[in-house]
Length: 342
Image (cartoon, rainbow, N blue to C red; front, side, top):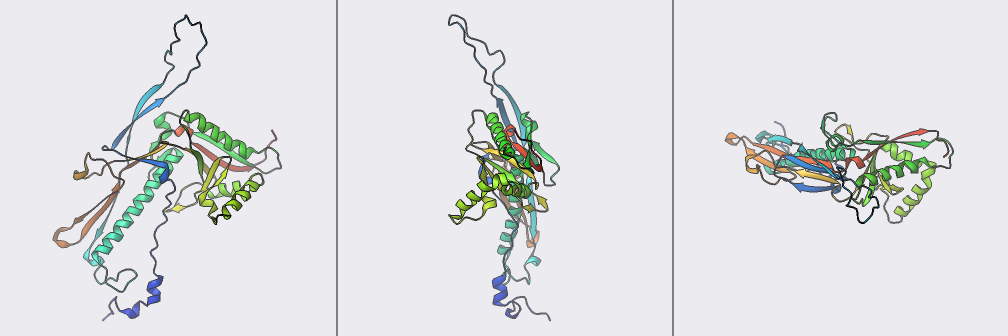
């Protein structure tokens, strides 16, 4: 006859103390950038207005005013559908029968297992929503396969995607092309934002891009000074906090989640931060009791199986993440090469 799982000799206090709950990696740096909005529909209509300024010629005060003649603002409407992200699991009596609770010698309870599985479901959906927010930062929101496009914001807003090549000089030069490209990205974003002020500028970058930027001789002095100032405050997490250069904070995003790299090694995704530049809409769940109600970021439910055979669990979210100024987004691609003096 086999020993019971709760026999103390099988699990010493040292082994129990060393038991840790290894949660999946969940970077959530982009969440604070997004204004959260609740909607009652799964289709969200966006009124897109392209404002135009015209130069007004001086004229005789006795003459009638000039006519805009179609040179004013234009408006169109696009309807986007919120994503539907449901995830389910099942809890059965056999899942806890004769099973020791994690990190303890006591039998596992149904309540603890339900909480554990609910948290696992929510964690996966949370990471998926962050993946969608990364797509909004880049201008194209992909599905979980990384290939299927859910929303191409450049196409939705009728604007062109801006791409710049950032060549790190491999030769000696007094001219700083690194600074020039970064400033060009800022100028482009400021122009496209128009009257919308940006509070700051950031870029999510790949690991090689970050290393190329911070180690290059044209930038190294500024980086060393910046890092030394942070060290004075006991902060040594340089990569994740971000290195600010030319008014842009470069934040390394080298994580690999579920086998998918969040940002390509030599790419950077530059974006402005400001009021309502990034928005996330939460639509209602596809349950009878939530139809036409204001959506929540997460929904969870537990339905009992017939004859007490366990429970069906479900967690879902129905987000739509967008950038309202995709024309202000810039993709930077890094490379080494010779640079001609200017």
